[in-house]
Length: 286
Ligand code: ACO
Ligand code: ZN
Image (tube, rainbow, N blue to C red):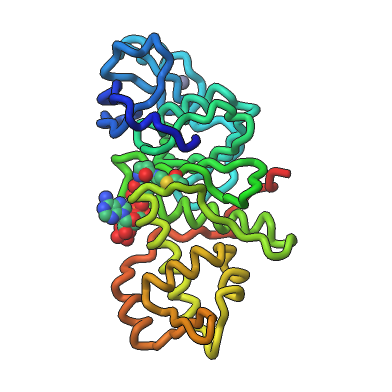
């Protein structure tokens, strides 16, 4: 997905059916022209093919043999699983996912070349299958060191900590994958939506406060960046928003007063779901 003016277009699809949910959409998504007259679309929750009529979906569900996203299961912890889908190997799935995601993403437009992306789809699994709760996409080779292109938690699953989990996963996976290449840090593609910025701010705040709380003595932004794989600019802006930075003799200095840290830690609330790196079952994409 890429920045564009598509968001000025009028919303066409008002609701979608996906698994056991009927979901109201938020924004325009450029479905192929034959769907122009539709106000509701029916999605297969596993292969993400979409249809105009409920009967079509019912027929499809009888013959669709997927019970989880295509691609490799790369993480499993309890009932949560993450699947990695190569846009080149699963082009139609990648495109369907983009159409679906755009319904909830403003200021982004479909980037048709799904070949260049990996998609990480997070699922809650039960005996009926693995049900998508959200995803993030990532360029296979990002010149700007973006570790995430687009992120979405489907509305019925929002505010449960999945967004923070997806962010943590993208950062931890980058750190894990690139741990041998020195100085590699990542950042999300811009622009961020309001909800995207809130979620990232929340994640960065939590990670940085936890380190500052434990750390004794001085620490620099560069050191924090090396420890967390978070880009220095993102660390600086987060610490500035927390008023933990002073500008002295032309330099940004971290002033981590324990009382201020405790106040922020209290306000930061629950940490959300943690990524258990030992549960990664994965060979990183080369
Ligand atoms: N109102 C106020 N704060 C919110 C809201 C909201 N509706 N939603 C999230 N937040 C903030 C909160 O601080 C929250 O932490 P808290 O619940 O501990 O207070 C924090 O964001 C993260 O909450 P999560 O439950 O971890 O995140 P969620 O699963 O809801 O997903 C996401 C966040 C992915 C941004 C979701 O809102 C979404 O999919 N939005 C639509 C798509 C979008 O805007 N994506 C980001 C675009 S930018 C990009 O892709 C690079
Ligand atoms: Zn299907």
